[in-house]
Image 1 (cartoon, rainbow, N blue to C red):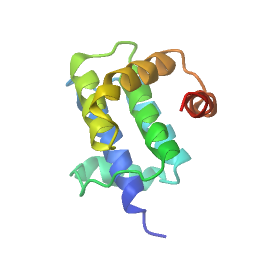
Image 2 (tube, rainbow, N blue to C red):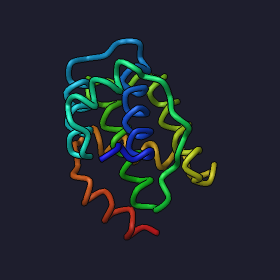
Image 3 (cartoon, rainbow, N blue to C red):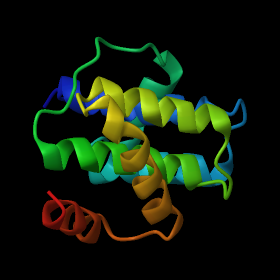
Length: 134
């Protein structure tokens, strides 16, 4: 079964987040593989995507839960090496904007997700908290 375009885009966005601080930590790679495998991308496909590493046409997730889940994965990647670099923060803010969130909410969304990622909060709890605060 071919890789869904939105999943490929998300995976490559995660890879670009890992590269944002110009140093790929082993913890970032481990997280990248785990998220890829959880999303149905096998190791061979992961290695092929990394080796090609071109950015496909951007495909934004459509539902709020998908948007938050994708941003949370990006937040986890930003936190994976134990420090959040300014370039990683800027990239997360960019994705949040690209996903269609109101500009006045982007910073608070990113701060919330980075905080939850630093605490390694389960995604279901994050999604539950977000839905309660709508």
